[in-house]
Image (cartoon, rainbow, N blue to C red; front, side):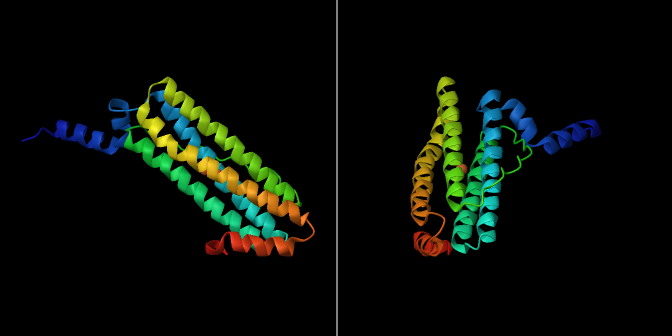
Length: 190
Ligand SMILES: [Fe+2]
Ligand SMILES: [Fe+2]
């Protein structure tokens, strides 16, 4: 017969779940857990920004560009979930933070896409910082996990730079042609 007091303690530990696990069996350091948690916010902030950009393009009467940015926003949420899952897999605690307000956007399609390029470069620097920390700490599991993001950032910067090149050709005046080309770039999202 298990004493009532013991049962209560076990129930309390069970309820603590991942938190208790994080305190005892974490595969990563606390500074690494903190930085990975921050990246969840950065990825969700990217989704938030791209949703704002999508709405701005809809407001400008450019539905193909709007859909392109909705798809980007969905991808960023997927990135955030990869960090959520990894943090839990290594026994750390997920701590969600508030999202920053998306910055004010210009009425110029070119300027909006330029802001997206700048944003992707900022995220690339954030991923590089995470990799540097993982290497400093000899945290090879996290280093391996981050490889996917290094590769993804190369692809994302190239893709958004391609979009910028296209939008620049439209010079904010010939946007119907740009829309037609954007629809061809992303047929699955059109
Ligand atoms: Fe991302
Ligand atoms: Fe991205």
